[in-house]
Image (cartoon, rainbow, N blue to C red; front, side, top):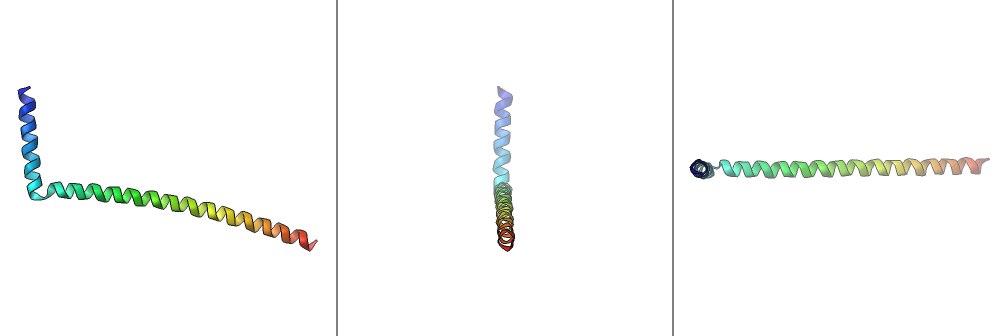
Length: 74
């Protein structure tokens, strides 16, 4: 029990000293930047999937158009 109190006080003191030197803000900034990067990666993946779907739809439409043109020419 006594060691938990001492550990809590030590951690509190350490965090207070880190907060004073700006390290706490640096950590918070790093977390925010990591979240932003993760969001951008997710958006990039969603865009990639959309482009693949659009490309597949365009290829399907082109194939249908070509088949229709071949039918008309016969």
